[in-house]
Length: 108
Image 1: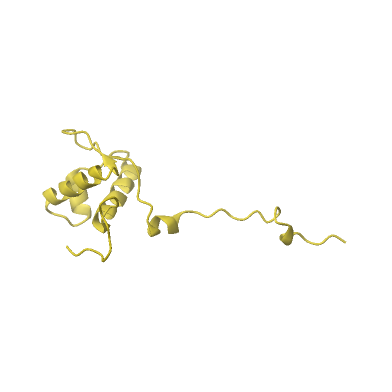
Image 2 (image 1 turned 90 degrees about the vertical axis):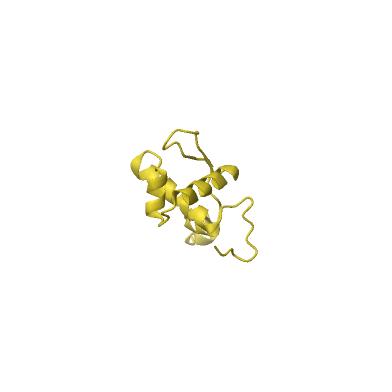
């Protein structure tokens, strides 16, 4: 697995862990319940469930998710990373054209 140059994964998820977080969030939104390890592995082409488990443990240590030991489908997302992808997808409010005096039509 190659690492991005200068990428510090101590507090941020790795690109693969970010993919997993997005998948989990989408799965929960669509199904109302967290995915199983097998669901994550199949969706992200990770046949080794041990690798999926390791990523989840790393995400727990970084405080992005929480799981209850021994309880399937207990993944809870605590936070999503604020990455350029997330920043770009955030909606920007439309400017209030009436409040800006430069956008007002002159009165005669």
